[in-house]
Amino acid sequence: MTPDEEKAILQSEPEELRRQLRIAWQTISELRQVNSLLERRIAELEGGGDDRPTFVKPNRPKSTGVKGPRKKRAVEHNHSRHREAPTKIVKHSLDRCPKCSHGLRRKSIDYTRQVIELPAPQPVDVIEHQVIKGYCPHCERWRSPKLDLTGQVLGQGRIGVRIVSLIAQLRNGLRMGVAQIQQYLATVHNLTISQGEIVKLLHRVREATTEVVEGLKKEVQAAEIVHADETGWREDGKNGYIWSFSTTGEAAVRYYEYDPSRAQAVVKRVLGDKTRGHLASDFYCGYNDYPGPQQRCWTHLLRDLHELKEKHEKEPEVIEWAKQVRALYDDAKQWLQEIRGPTIEQREMKYVELVGRSHQLGMQYTYAKRHPCQALAKRLLRHEDELFQFVLVKGLSADNNLAERSIRPLVVTRKISGGTRSDAGTKTRMALATLFQTWRARGLNPFHECLKLLSRQAPVAT
Image (tube, rainbow, N blue to C red; front, side, top):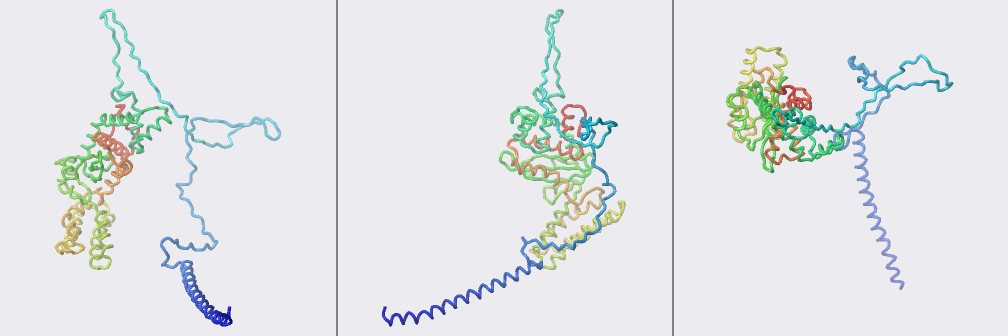
């Protein structure tokens, strides 16, 4: 390397070092800014700032170490664990002292401990009915008694009514699948039965209880208050609807019926043309032609009002109108709580007042085209005589919660199974749901009631 080349290299090194130094200082400056932001964010999170991320839980306040007085339990809860009546007693006793081997005397119970256990699984009883024939020399014919197993089996089947009732309970009460029922019977009772036979037994239960289900339908038609709702159901891959009709009281009924249509004719067909009881429902137009008085569900209306306020939260006019509609409901509920045993005249006066206020709110925006409140204002006018029937009638609810809770078990079943695959399967599902949900609503044991019904021991649910 010549002296000139070496000199050029030495002169270029300081420039390269200065360039690298500038880059390093710039990186350090950026890291300091990031560090400052992180320290500020950590301080905000530790200080419990309101702008913390939604996934970060607020800090728990530090304990002072001083605990207040222990809250005393209510008097009615001051009792020991409930003990069952023992079905078997096992005694544990010592004959001699474990330390000195001296004989023990004056024995008495020191303490007891209960263990609740299931007995060994009981296998099914296979009962063989032998029909003995005898020869009559006078008639010169063989004679045998007529075998009548009514109340023990359904038709000419081989499965007893107790097993049939258990299968119906597992299917409708516990929502078990047919394969699960088959496995349960084989595991617990050592009973081998095909899935097809299980389905056939459920159909036979429906056929044997047709009159009872029709009787429940007549009870719904004659009820003073009926709650109705509908939900989707698929039969053999085709869309249809389950219609639910529920009544209240000690003789409560839960009646279900499937129909491919969601038209008004279904309500007329199920409830009849001469029905005059109060019908509680949502705002679906399928209930509009019901001949009797109606109570529309306030829960649905309040939900729509809430959505209206959220969608137009920056429009005070809309917010104020929605609040005034909500005030009608609050006023009616508060009046019913404050007035003990209102007379018919008091109820009618309050009803007229509420309907008048509702009419004014409806007229406010009914003809205001494209106004956010127009749709709900029209609803107030269309159903103004159906919003406050609960003020007039004692025991009538302002919502349709009963119908929605009644139809919920079938909604869960639909989500699990997707529906039914035949007309017979749908009829069986609806009939057994009617029976089992009615028994449950009346506080009865569905298994025992089904067994009584199939055994014809006593009239049930009629």
